[in-house]
Length: 328
Ligand code: TRP
Ligand code: SF4
Image 1 (tube, rainbow, N blue to C red):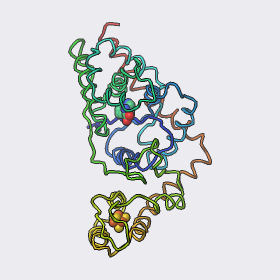
Image 2: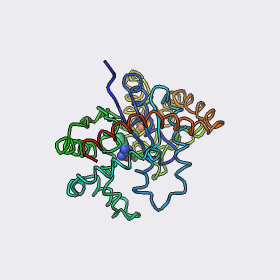
Image 3: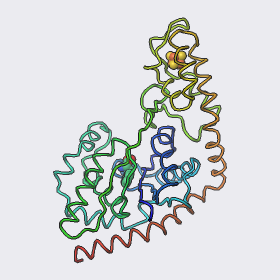
Image 4: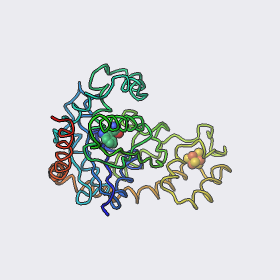
């Protein structure tokens, strides 16, 4: 029996941080062992919000591919390709747009939310409204059964399923109806306690050295009620503790950190020291591989070209089926 197919993509927003690592890439790395995976860089999707500022996009793509390789994404197991290299994505996007009712897109909760949140950008564009149709074409072209995504992407996946069903009903059963693979992501706070994000300036990057990581963790926000060393703290509201949940073994967390914090037995600096003891050895190998990859950045291009050939076979075949089904 052939393996189930998995597909996922990421927008090239620049250097990757711990949010990407624990929110997606660690999961991709495991999936590539058990499934037939396709991973890609969604550069056209980046344009839906960054269309006015495109200068950095090539650089962002290269950095992101090198970061992905450093985390253990293995292109010999899972092709890694660039969306805009395959005109099939654009062509299917056009065809699907013919059968997608505009109210389906306007109803999408992410659409309204993002328009309200990203107020510095004019997101009244046709392309931004059509974001989920492009995403549907990414997924349906590969007949992916599973799509690992974060909870924020679930409405998009629901739309993909509806578009696929509508196509299958109107023409013939070409598309596989994909399912979201919702993995339990740990909460990854940034150094200011908010969600880790490039735009908040609170991120720890995969390209940060041990010294840089240490310099970011030391002044990190803790339980705000713990002002003096003698005040007991509450790990449940402390973002440093959220990082302990990712990096520190449970036994140590439960028997030393948690009670130590609640009784003021340990200070916040000691607590961060313990965190760093666990964090640095996990991040170091990724950093080292990343540094090594930086000496031969052309590898990013090579990987994407190889991924292109493998993706092309599948995508072009599906597109032919689509056109035949539509009588085009
Ligand atoms: N929209 C996704 C995100 O921002 C990226 C993406 C584009 C994607 N196309 C996809 C994810 C197809 C999974 C499948 O995270
Ligand atoms: Fe947070 Fe650790 Fe300080 Fe407790 S001791 S408040 S868990 S940093």
